[in-house]
Amino acid sequence: MIRHVCVAIAAVLLALAGICCTPASAADGEVVKLGFAAPLTGPQAHYGKEMQNGIVLALEEINAGRPVIGGRPVLFELIAEDDQADPKQGTLVAQKLIDAKIAGMLGHFNSGTSIPASRLYAQAGIPQIAMATAPAYTMQGFRTTFRAMTSDTQQGGVMGRFAVEKLGAKRIAIVDDRTAYGQGLADEFEKAARAAGAKIVVREFTTDKATDFNSILTRIKGAGVEAIFFGGADAQAAPMAKQMRQLALKAQFLGGEMVKSPTFIKLAGDAAEGAIASLAGLPLAKMPGGKDFAARYQARFKAPVEIYAPYAYDAAQAMVAAMKRANSTEPAKYLPELARTRIAGVTTARLAYDANGDLKDGAITIYKVDAGEWKPLETAGGSTGR
Image (cartoon, rainbow, N blue to C red; front, top):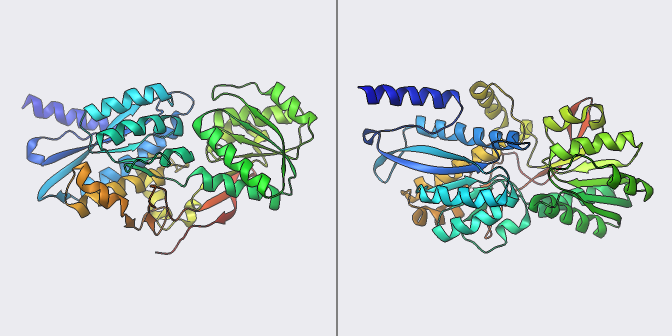
Protein backbone atom coordinates (compact mmCIF):
# COMPACT_ATOMS: atom_id res chain seq x y z
CA MET A 1 0.00 0.00 0.00
CA ILE A 2 2.79 2.40 0.95
CA ARG A 3 4.60 1.69 -2.35
CA HIS A 4 1.49 2.50 -4.39
CA VAL A 5 0.99 5.78 -2.52
CA CYS A 6 4.64 6.76 -3.14
CA VAL A 7 4.33 5.98 -6.83
CA ALA A 8 1.17 8.05 -7.08
CA ILE A 9 2.81 11.00 -5.34
CA ALA A 10 5.86 10.73 -7.60
CA ALA A 11 3.62 10.72 -10.66
CA VAL A 12 1.86 13.90 -9.52
CA LEU A 13 5.13 15.68 -8.76
CA LEU A 14 6.61 14.73 -12.13
CA ALA A 15 3.47 15.85 -13.95
CA LEU A 16 3.60 19.20 -12.18
CA ALA A 17 7.23 19.53 -13.22
CA GLY A 18 6.24 18.93 -16.84
CA ILE A 19 8.47 15.88 -17.18
CA CYS A 20 7.12 12.78 -18.91
CA CYS A 21 8.81 10.16 -16.81
CA THR A 22 5.83 7.93 -16.02
CA PRO A 23 6.27 5.42 -13.17
CA ALA A 24 4.90 2.02 -14.10
CA SER A 25 4.54 -1.45 -12.68
CA ALA A 26 4.86 -4.76 -14.50
CA ALA A 27 1.07 -4.85 -14.82
CA ASP A 28 1.26 -1.85 -17.12
CA GLY A 29 3.16 -3.85 -19.75
CA GLU A 30 6.56 -3.06 -21.24
CA VAL A 31 8.14 0.24 -20.20
CA VAL A 32 10.06 1.68 -23.15
CA LYS A 33 12.70 4.23 -22.19
CA LEU A 34 13.46 7.08 -24.56
CA GLY A 35 16.38 9.41 -23.90
CA PHE A 36 16.37 13.19 -24.03
CA ALA A 37 19.19 15.69 -23.52
CA ALA A 38 19.46 19.44 -24.00
CA PRO A 39 20.53 22.51 -22.03
CA LEU A 40 18.08 22.66 -19.12
CA THR A 41 20.12 25.14 -17.11
CA GLY A 42 22.07 28.23 -18.17
CA PRO A 43 21.40 30.85 -20.86
CA GLN A 44 20.09 28.31 -23.39
CA ALA A 45 17.72 26.52 -20.99
CA HIS A 46 14.63 28.02 -22.65
CA TYR A 47 15.52 26.24 -25.89
CA GLY A 48 15.98 22.89 -24.17
CA LYS A 49 12.86 23.16 -22.04
CA GLU A 50 10.66 23.92 -25.03
CA MET A 51 12.13 20.97 -26.92
CA GLN A 52 11.44 18.77 -23.91
CA ASN A 53 7.87 20.03 -23.68
CA GLY A 54 7.19 19.06 -27.29
CA ILE A 55 8.38 15.51 -26.61
CA VAL A 56 6.45 15.31 -23.35
CA LEU A 57 3.22 16.30 -25.09
CA ALA A 58 3.77 13.69 -27.82
CA LEU A 59 4.48 10.86 -25.39
CA GLU A 60 1.58 11.76 -23.12
CA GLU A 61 -0.76 11.62 -26.10
CA ILE A 62 0.77 8.36 -27.33
CA ASN A 63 0.51 6.75 -23.88
CA ALA A 64 -3.11 7.90 -23.57
CA GLY A 65 -3.85 5.83 -26.67
CA ARG A 66 -2.67 2.67 -24.87
CA PRO A 67 -0.28 1.51 -27.60
CA VAL A 68 0.40 -2.18 -28.19
CA ILE A 69 3.68 -3.19 -29.85
CA GLY A 70 4.81 -6.76 -30.34
CA GLY A 71 1.56 -8.00 -28.83
CA ARG A 72 2.19 -6.26 -25.50
CA PRO A 73 0.95 -2.98 -24.04
CA VAL A 74 3.78 -0.45 -23.89
CA LEU A 75 4.29 2.69 -21.84
CA PHE A 76 6.83 5.26 -23.02
CA GLU A 77 9.03 6.84 -20.37
CA LEU A 78 11.27 9.84 -21.05
CA ILE A 79 14.65 9.91 -19.32
CA ALA A 80 15.74 13.56 -19.37
CA GLU A 81 19.28 14.84 -18.83
CA ASP A 82 20.82 18.33 -18.77
CA ASP A 83 23.83 18.47 -21.10
CA GLN A 84 24.37 22.21 -20.39
CA ALA A 85 25.04 22.81 -24.13
CA ASP A 86 28.56 21.56 -23.40
CA PRO A 87 30.15 18.95 -25.71
CA LYS A 88 32.00 17.18 -22.88
CA GLN A 89 28.90 17.02 -20.72
CA GLY A 90 26.99 15.85 -23.77
CA THR A 91 29.12 12.73 -24.17
CA LEU A 92 28.87 11.96 -20.43
CA VAL A 93 25.10 12.28 -20.62
CA ALA A 94 25.00 10.12 -23.75
CA GLN A 95 26.86 7.29 -22.05
CA LYS A 96 24.59 7.59 -19.02
CA LEU A 97 21.51 7.23 -21.22
CA ILE A 98 23.00 4.31 -23.13
CA ASP A 99 23.74 2.58 -19.82
CA ALA A 100 20.10 3.20 -18.83
CA LYS A 101 19.09 1.00 -21.81
CA ILE A 102 17.15 3.61 -23.77
CA ALA A 103 15.46 2.35 -26.93
CA GLY A 104 15.84 5.65 -28.77
CA MET A 105 17.31 9.13 -28.36
CA LEU A 106 15.42 12.41 -28.85
CA GLY A 107 18.17 15.02 -28.71
CA HIS A 108 20.55 16.58 -28.24
CA PHE A 109 19.55 20.16 -28.93
CA ASN A 110 22.84 21.80 -29.90
CA SER A 111 24.98 20.71 -32.82
CA GLY A 112 28.03 20.91 -30.57
CA THR A 113 26.63 18.26 -28.23
CA SER A 114 24.78 16.19 -30.83
CA ILE A 115 27.81 15.58 -33.05
CA PRO A 116 30.20 14.04 -30.48
CA ALA A 117 27.35 12.19 -28.74
CA SER A 118 26.10 10.73 -32.02
CA ARG A 119 29.14 8.48 -32.29
CA LEU A 120 28.26 6.86 -28.98
CA TYR A 121 24.65 6.28 -29.97
CA ALA A 122 25.78 4.88 -33.32
CA GLN A 123 28.18 2.46 -31.65
CA ALA A 124 25.34 1.33 -29.38
CA GLY A 125 22.96 1.04 -32.35
CA ILE A 126 20.49 3.50 -30.85
CA PRO A 127 18.47 5.67 -33.29
CA GLN A 128 18.87 9.39 -32.60
CA ILE A 129 16.71 12.31 -33.77
CA ALA A 130 18.47 15.55 -32.86
CA MET A 131 17.52 19.20 -33.22
CA ALA A 132 21.09 19.84 -34.41
CA THR A 133 21.27 21.83 -37.63
CA ALA A 134 25.02 21.83 -38.43
CA PRO A 135 25.66 19.95 -41.71
CA ALA A 136 28.34 17.79 -40.07
CA TYR A 137 25.80 15.98 -37.87
CA THR A 138 24.39 13.83 -40.67
CA MET A 139 27.54 13.78 -42.80
CA GLN A 140 29.35 11.29 -40.56
CA GLY A 141 27.90 8.23 -42.26
CA PHE A 142 26.02 6.90 -39.21
CA ARG A 143 22.79 5.03 -40.00
CA THR A 144 21.38 6.10 -36.64
CA THR A 145 21.36 9.90 -37.07
CA PHE A 146 18.23 11.83 -38.08
CA ARG A 147 17.16 15.46 -37.88
CA ALA A 148 14.13 17.14 -36.33
CA MET A 149 14.78 20.32 -38.36
CA THR A 150 16.29 21.20 -41.73
CA SER A 151 20.06 21.58 -41.82
CA ASP A 152 22.05 24.80 -42.00
CA THR A 153 23.06 23.92 -45.55
CA GLN A 154 19.50 24.89 -46.45
CA GLN A 155 19.01 27.64 -43.89
CA GLY A 156 22.34 29.39 -44.48
CA GLY A 157 21.85 29.18 -48.23
CA VAL A 158 18.42 30.81 -48.10
CA MET A 159 19.63 33.59 -45.81
CA GLY A 160 22.75 34.27 -47.87
CA ARG A 161 20.76 34.68 -51.06
CA PHE A 162 18.09 36.75 -49.31
CA ALA A 163 20.67 39.20 -47.97
CA VAL A 164 22.05 39.86 -51.44
CA GLU A 165 19.05 39.45 -53.73
CA LYS A 166 16.29 40.89 -51.55
CA LEU A 167 18.14 43.31 -49.26
CA GLY A 168 20.70 44.40 -51.85
CA ALA A 169 23.63 43.91 -49.46
CA LYS A 170 26.94 43.80 -51.34
CA ARG A 171 29.36 44.35 -48.43
CA ILE A 172 28.69 41.99 -45.56
CA ALA A 173 30.29 41.21 -42.19
CA ILE A 174 29.94 37.81 -40.52
CA VAL A 175 30.38 37.02 -36.82
CA ASP A 176 30.01 33.54 -35.33
CA ASP A 177 30.30 32.13 -31.82
CA ARG A 178 32.68 29.27 -32.80
CA THR A 179 30.16 26.60 -31.77
CA ALA A 180 29.43 23.84 -34.27
CA TYR A 181 26.04 25.45 -34.86
CA GLY A 182 27.17 29.06 -35.12
CA GLN A 183 30.22 28.45 -37.29
CA GLY A 184 28.41 25.95 -39.50
CA LEU A 185 25.52 28.34 -40.13
CA ALA A 186 27.87 31.24 -40.81
CA ASP A 187 29.92 29.15 -43.25
CA GLU A 188 26.82 28.22 -45.25
CA PHE A 189 25.62 31.84 -45.22
CA GLU A 190 29.01 32.98 -46.52
CA LYS A 191 29.01 30.45 -49.37
CA ALA A 192 25.57 31.54 -50.55
CA ALA A 193 26.22 35.27 -50.17
CA ARG A 194 29.47 35.05 -52.14
CA ALA A 195 27.79 32.98 -54.84
CA ALA A 196 25.07 35.63 -55.11
CA GLY A 197 27.68 38.36 -55.67
CA ALA A 198 28.36 39.83 -52.24
CA LYS A 199 31.78 40.54 -50.75
CA ILE A 200 32.46 39.31 -47.23
CA VAL A 201 34.43 42.29 -45.98
CA VAL A 202 34.91 41.13 -42.38
CA ARG A 203 34.74 37.68 -40.74
CA GLU A 204 34.98 37.82 -36.93
CA PHE A 205 34.36 35.32 -34.16
CA THR A 206 33.41 35.40 -30.51
CA THR A 207 32.17 32.81 -27.96
CA ASP A 208 28.79 31.56 -26.83
CA LYS A 209 29.36 33.23 -23.46
CA ALA A 210 30.44 36.70 -24.62
CA THR A 211 28.39 39.85 -23.96
CA ASP A 212 30.75 42.66 -25.01
CA PHE A 213 31.06 43.08 -28.77
CA ASN A 214 32.16 46.72 -28.94
CA SER A 215 35.63 46.05 -30.32
CA ILE A 216 34.30 43.69 -33.01
CA LEU A 217 31.53 46.09 -33.96
CA THR A 218 33.89 49.06 -34.08
CA ARG A 219 36.06 47.22 -36.61
CA ILE A 220 32.99 46.29 -38.60
CA LYS A 221 31.73 49.87 -38.57
CA GLY A 222 35.01 51.05 -40.05
CA ALA A 223 34.62 48.56 -42.91
CA GLY A 224 31.40 50.18 -44.14
CA VAL A 225 29.23 47.08 -44.39
CA GLU A 226 25.53 46.99 -45.24
CA ALA A 227 24.64 43.85 -43.28
CA ILE A 228 25.97 41.84 -40.35
CA PHE A 229 25.15 38.13 -40.09
CA PHE A 230 25.52 36.52 -36.66
CA GLY A 231 25.79 32.78 -36.19
CA GLY A 232 24.88 32.12 -32.57
CA ALA A 233 22.22 32.25 -29.86
CA ASP A 234 19.88 34.98 -28.64
CA ALA A 235 21.89 35.49 -25.43
CA GLN A 236 24.71 36.95 -27.56
CA ALA A 237 22.61 38.36 -30.41
CA ALA A 238 20.64 40.66 -28.10
CA PRO A 239 23.58 42.56 -26.57
CA MET A 240 25.18 42.68 -30.02
CA ALA A 241 22.07 44.37 -31.44
CA LYS A 242 22.01 46.84 -28.53
CA GLN A 243 25.69 47.70 -28.96
CA MET A 244 25.18 48.20 -32.70
CA ARG A 245 22.60 50.85 -31.90
CA GLN A 246 24.87 52.49 -29.30
CA LEU A 247 27.63 52.72 -31.90
CA ALA A 248 25.19 54.11 -34.50
CA LEU A 249 26.03 51.16 -36.75
CA LYS A 250 23.31 51.21 -39.40
CA ALA A 251 23.96 47.80 -40.97
CA GLN A 252 21.08 45.31 -41.17
CA PHE A 253 21.31 42.70 -38.40
CA LEU A 254 20.73 39.08 -39.55
CA GLY A 255 20.70 35.76 -37.72
CA GLY A 256 19.51 32.15 -37.69
CA GLU A 257 16.78 30.33 -35.78
CA MET A 258 18.41 30.68 -32.34
CA VAL A 259 18.02 34.44 -32.78
CA LYS A 260 14.37 34.16 -33.85
CA SER A 261 13.00 33.94 -30.32
CA PRO A 262 10.87 36.00 -27.94
CA THR A 263 13.91 36.05 -25.65
CA PHE A 264 15.93 38.00 -28.23
CA ILE A 265 13.25 40.69 -28.40
CA LYS A 266 12.94 40.79 -24.61
CA LEU A 267 16.71 41.13 -24.08
CA ALA A 268 17.40 43.51 -26.96
CA GLY A 269 14.43 45.80 -26.33
CA ASP A 270 14.05 48.56 -28.91
CA ALA A 271 17.31 47.47 -30.58
CA ALA A 272 15.55 44.31 -31.77
CA GLU A 273 13.36 46.31 -34.13
CA GLY A 274 14.12 45.53 -37.76
CA ALA A 275 16.28 42.47 -37.04
CA ILE A 276 15.88 39.63 -39.54
CA ALA A 277 16.29 35.93 -38.82
CA SER A 278 15.57 32.62 -40.53
CA LEU A 279 13.83 29.62 -39.04
CA ALA A 280 13.63 26.13 -40.47
CA GLY A 281 10.04 25.26 -41.26
CA LEU A 282 6.79 27.01 -41.95
CA PRO A 283 5.31 29.69 -39.66
CA LEU A 284 3.28 27.99 -36.91
CA ALA A 285 -0.01 29.28 -38.33
CA LYS A 286 0.78 27.68 -41.71
CA MET A 287 1.95 24.31 -40.40
CA PRO A 288 -0.53 21.53 -41.26
CA GLY A 289 -1.18 20.84 -37.59
CA GLY A 290 0.05 24.14 -36.20
CA LYS A 291 -3.20 25.61 -34.89
CA ASP A 292 -4.33 22.49 -33.03
CA PHE A 293 -0.83 21.87 -31.69
CA ALA A 294 -0.56 25.44 -30.39
CA ALA A 295 -3.85 25.05 -28.53
CA ARG A 296 -2.86 21.72 -26.95
CA TYR A 297 0.58 23.04 -26.03
CA GLN A 298 -0.90 26.15 -24.40
CA ALA A 299 -3.39 24.07 -22.43
CA ARG A 300 -0.70 21.64 -21.22
CA PHE A 301 2.15 24.03 -20.39
CA LYS A 302 0.36 27.37 -19.93
CA ALA A 303 2.79 29.00 -22.35
CA PRO A 304 2.84 29.70 -26.09
CA VAL A 305 4.90 27.76 -28.61
CA GLU A 306 8.16 29.59 -29.30
CA ILE A 307 10.39 27.73 -31.76
CA TYR A 308 11.30 24.09 -31.23
CA ALA A 309 8.33 22.30 -29.63
CA PRO A 310 6.53 21.32 -32.88
CA TYR A 311 9.69 19.76 -34.32
CA ALA A 312 10.39 17.85 -31.11
CA TYR A 313 6.78 16.62 -31.08
CA ASP A 314 7.07 15.35 -34.64
CA ALA A 315 10.38 13.65 -33.85
CA ALA A 316 8.84 11.69 -30.98
CA GLN A 317 5.84 10.75 -33.10
CA ALA A 318 8.11 9.59 -35.95
CA MET A 319 10.17 7.38 -33.63
CA VAL A 320 7.15 5.72 -32.04
CA ALA A 321 5.44 5.30 -35.43
CA ALA A 322 8.52 3.44 -36.67
CA MET A 323 8.32 1.09 -33.68
CA LYS A 324 4.66 0.42 -34.43
CA ARG A 325 5.36 -0.35 -38.10
CA ALA A 326 8.22 -2.66 -37.12
CA ASN A 327 6.05 -4.16 -34.36
CA SER A 328 9.12 -3.91 -32.14
CA THR A 329 10.78 -1.48 -29.75
CA GLU A 330 14.21 -3.03 -30.35
CA PRO A 331 16.47 -0.41 -32.00
CA ALA A 332 17.89 -2.78 -34.61
CA LYS A 333 14.41 -3.81 -35.71
CA TYR A 334 12.71 -0.42 -35.91
CA LEU A 335 15.70 1.57 -37.25
CA PRO A 336 15.01 0.57 -40.90
CA GLU A 337 11.40 1.70 -40.49
CA LEU A 338 12.52 5.03 -39.05
CA ALA A 339 14.68 5.58 -42.13
CA ARG A 340 11.62 4.85 -44.29
CA THR A 341 9.39 7.33 -42.39
CA ARG A 342 6.55 8.81 -44.43
CA ILE A 343 4.05 10.44 -42.08
CA ALA A 344 1.98 13.61 -41.80
CA GLY A 345 3.24 15.70 -38.91
CA VAL A 346 2.46 18.97 -37.20
CA THR A 347 5.28 20.76 -39.03
CA THR A 348 4.91 19.23 -42.48
CA ALA A 349 2.44 17.14 -44.44
CA ARG A 350 5.25 14.83 -45.59
CA LEU A 351 7.75 14.06 -42.86
CA ALA A 352 10.45 11.90 -44.47
CA TYR A 353 14.22 11.45 -44.36
CA ASP A 354 16.78 11.15 -47.12
CA ALA A 355 19.65 8.65 -47.15
CA ASN A 356 21.65 10.80 -44.70
CA GLY A 357 18.83 11.29 -42.21
CA ASP A 358 18.13 14.87 -43.33
CA LEU A 359 14.53 16.01 -43.77
CA LYS A 360 13.36 15.85 -47.38
CA ASP A 361 10.61 18.45 -47.17
CA GLY A 362 12.27 21.36 -45.38
CA ALA A 363 10.93 24.88 -45.59
CA ILE A 364 12.87 27.95 -44.47
CA THR A 365 10.96 31.04 -43.35
CA ILE A 366 12.51 34.47 -42.95
CA TYR A 367 11.15 36.74 -40.21
CA LYS A 368 11.58 40.39 -39.24
CA VAL A 369 10.96 42.13 -35.91
CA ASP A 370 8.15 44.58 -36.54
CA ALA A 371 6.50 46.50 -33.68
CA GLY A 372 8.07 44.15 -31.14
CA GLU A 373 7.00 40.89 -32.82
CA TRP A 374 8.59 38.40 -35.19
CA LYS A 375 6.57 38.55 -38.41
CA PRO A 376 7.13 36.31 -41.46
CA LEU A 377 8.49 37.89 -44.63
CA GLU A 378 8.70 34.90 -46.97
CA THR A 379 8.99 31.11 -47.02
CA ALA A 380 11.11 28.99 -49.33
CA GLY A 381 10.15 25.34 -49.82
CA GLY A 382 7.96 23.15 -47.63
CA SER A 383 4.40 21.96 -48.00
CA THR A 384 1.19 22.75 -46.17
CA GLY A 385 -1.31 20.33 -47.67
CA ARG A 386 -2.02 16.88 -46.27
